[in-house]
Image (cartoon, rainbow, N blue to C red; front, side, top):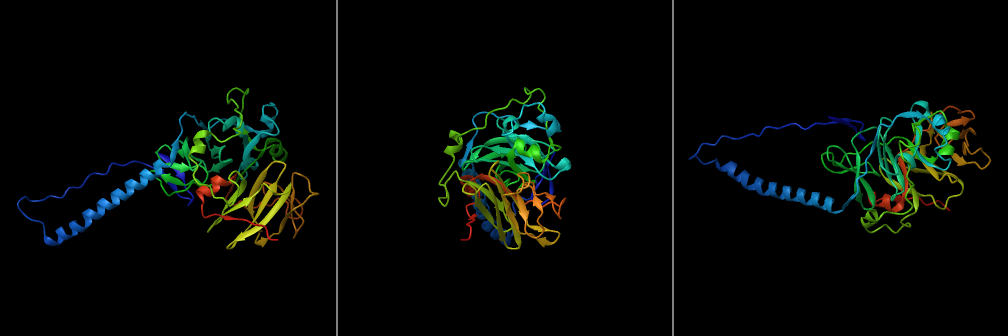
Length: 367
């Protein structure tokens, strides 16, 4: 049996149960009542239509998939360590890209993509479930789960398969076919940054043990979209360049893309949707974007990028003058020690985001 935590917070157990067939005893030589015959004449054609429709829908889903031709073995529960300990081995470069989770013991953690995800593409672990899609330009982080492997692509977006046969979008965490179709994995607070920058913020945080450097063989990050991934890409929404980098934000009632390529070295975007007021933090030196809720203790703060603040805390709020890190932590000022609530978001390429969310809005700065 496998437990999966879904976006609705429910813990779903996967279990196959044998359901005994039911038979109706019919006496030979007697006709069924006329009322029952009329009902059967109506239900049988309807049942056939529903079966055919379901079969057609399943076939359509399969036709859009490009299945991976070479096998990729995921990593499951690699032994853990501390960032400061692994940094001392000089196996990770300061500019190595890492996926960092922000809200956990030891102030979260991070691990290098080149060592743990570039080859396997999937890590199943207690810290989280991680998917790396170099074509789509993102690493997705979800609540812990096991039994996931890379399966292929759909619309240029990586597809993963869970142990029960369900296929999931790696970018959105949505089940696209199989026993859990329509369910969604729950994201965990995360961002992508550089190893050196994360070490400056949280050397005490957790990571995975590299041992002597040979246990998990590092592989260069792909620099171009694979032929298989590219062949699955359909028509791309032309509102932005297909490979533009965006921060995709999942509001309660809408989806929105925030273009990043033209932003200055430090930037903060304030926006809202319904009753959700958010701040998008951007730090160009590490190409890192992340979104947080602007409310702290019932008060809505007005954040802005501050050019004279240290690189460890490039964001300030106007109300108190407190300085904030990209991890959403107040480190200097009246609100020191406070943490912002992370908003569901993921940094990726435009074509991948718009393929999964074709109805997405695009942020445009007010002139």
